[in-house]
Length: 575
Image (cartoon, rainbow, N blue to C red):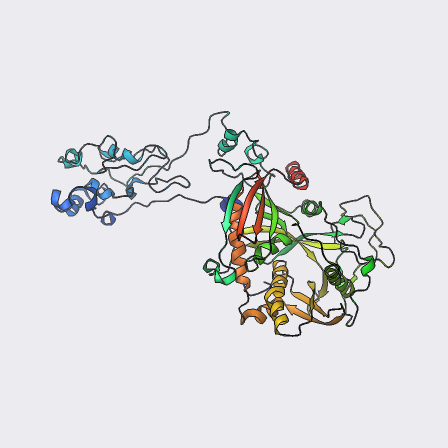
């Protein structure tokens, strides 16, 4: 593990099917005679002892033997169904007093057993049993057959038989599948998972939908009100969810001319820091980052190219979206949003760029200082890559950048990682700045960051409370073991560098209690659980956080990016 903020052991979560379904079934074991409940005096007008004397437990047991589990009085039923009736299993989400029925009594029950049918009627009907005034068809208590002599014949030899669990009848030919009712009522197109044999993306089981109206387009599907930030929220305390060490399953490189390759040609190597360098050099020729609408499509194409299995994956996303979620555990001053699209049991989180105000000239120059630091600290590991092998745009051969190329924010290397947070399996794309070699000679990734030099307590506090939190989240998610920070002055001159590990960052802020990684992971686990449970297969949403109201809002929308639609179609064709 990258940090001991989380346990070292790997707790394997449930499968995707187990992940989606919440089991509401109970397996009831038959009790012994001595474990039968005590008669409740609240079921009649007078206590049982005043009406009939003490319960005939011993005489009944001696007369009928320990095998006969039928109680001597209907007063034993109380407010729950008797356990000796067998595997009576309530349906999903049903309260304990409702059963999907109808059920059949096990053979060998006494002749008056049908009196229990009051609470074994149909789905959604209220509980009613012997001794209850609302029991249908029940005779008055004084006329109950149990008072007659010999009303409890011994049960046949052998173990007692119990009622089988309820099995719903098969759907008639041509009937809509389970979960289709909300779509039919509102005249909406059926989502892919309800159109066999093409089940979602062909990766994972279909979702069982609740029979409730779907939110209309633009309507709020779910809201999550957040408590106080950080570990001041009592709900963010407790055991840290396990975070599985990320495993690299694919990668992609975007070159200076915009072409994408599924190899490491754009991964650069760390070199010695040029202390005293001017980070303003090259600002006039800087190529600013262009928002690539097909960026998520490149990640999905790399996943398909490397044949990464998504059948048990709940989320596919760029790390940027997870940075937002984990950071919101403490930072409630930034609003953000992301696209949410569920297909075939997998939720695709698309990066949405929020509305940003126009940067000042000073802010633009400070942004460039970060890219300039990366360019000064790295060198290309392969001189000229001219082979189109593994190319997303295989019609290109020329890869040599022009002489004295400017700093280009669009050139990048992205590692695609598979990990798991709690029960959520995640495939994540993470941009990597560079790499170096560890003491064992193995390649390890490095994050490059810049910061104003720390000159007083205020700058130190700001650095440790905010910047180190951002550094830790970004590096921890991708298991990047080393962060190299370049400290510069107000004019953009590099003064010094400092190498930090994830453990160094944790130890630096532990005693000051500014933030903890455990709180961030607990918060993210809660958000992902809430999000996955509120999105419906085949539907599209926008998840947003507004810093003014402190709420996560999931709102239904009508648009799915073309790259996700084409990705799902390609997966179906592959299967």
